[in-house]
Image (tube, rainbow over all chains, first blue to last red; front, side, top):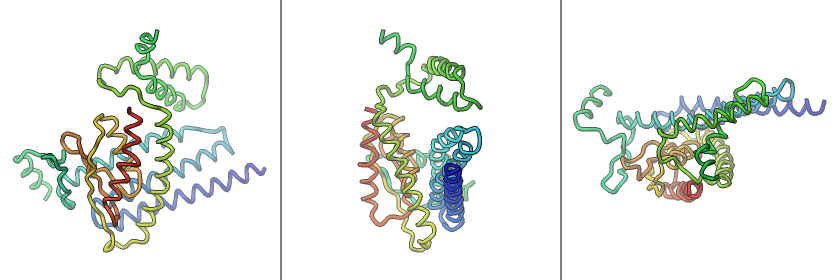
Length: 129
Length: 166
């Protein structure tokens, strides 16, 4: 009985935390007015929000059901894929010149995204702007 | 004997990971599925080994485990910090910045781990690599001192990733 009460409150706590972080992620997405800063809100706050919801789901399944550990896999995949998609979006922003120009990396190098052949560069700016 | 084991398990960590994922994917954990997962974990790395040359060998798992715990802790702190920035700092006062992180790491796998860590931790998103992979471009959401952030990434994460990949 006590175990179930504790599980119940723990579940409620994690559900609330997850919901709050998901909400903050959405607010950040709306509030920031620059494409690069906008990227920060969903990548971080989103993982935490969904992470908490999944922990709540696990507590629920172990306390009141058969128990399930699929949530670990969801979390694993999420934490592996979230940085990749964020990286892609950042690269698109850089490619379309929709953000402040980054400093050069030095040593006569260029950023991989910005190293576009001259002809293609004109093509991409025309399409983008 | 060790050569035999090396031939059968070119990548022991991958074997364990595949076995784990397979077992967890099942609706009910059973001994048969664990064994089948281990078999898959043996076959898949053997079949794919030729498409992944120069895969990292000698990954230090103790250090990797410590690193994962450290990063998880940082992710929670990062989330609270970013949530606070989102809710309290007005757009006009926000100081985003680019920082260029010169990399000591050369292995693609190690750089991937570092870039992923940077994206998941406090207010930073890794945005691009230089064409030779010698520097990482990082965008910081709100910073007063970009140098300190650079130092933090170099000392807190990069040295540890370097130790993991030997």
